[in-house]
Amino acid sequence: MSLSLLQRVRDDLNTAGLLDGYVQRFYRWIDTDMKSGQIILFRMSGTYGPGAHVIQRPDVSIQLLCDPDQVTQGDTRMLAILRHFRSNFEIASTNGDAFNVVPLGGYDGPRYLQNNRALFDLRLRCMVEDM
Image (cartoon, rainbow, N blue to C red):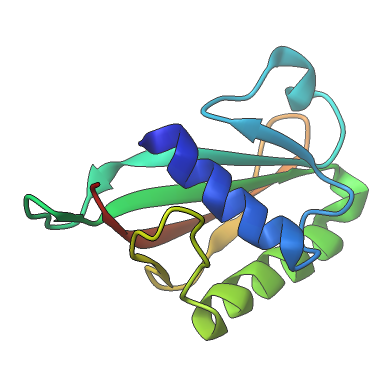
């Protein structure tokens, strides 16, 4: 379920035009990502909300990695993503399962790597129906 969940979150942001200019990754960075470019990473954050046998509440992490001269734009983009999920918490599903996304507070960042690239992080709580 994790990859399909991450893809649904990604697809929702893509439909909203919030991924333009960002290379998309799932689960992990690659070595070249640490050097340059605007990257967005989708991964399961490792902590999960309460669940039941039908409804689960997994957490998803969205991270933006920006070049030093793109920090303001990265901050603006992450704020737009946060606002998107605050106002559009229900994502359309193709297979009929329930799917809601709620930000777990604000986003973190920028935090800086040794090479001055900026990192922003947002965590989402998703509600999905296990079918």
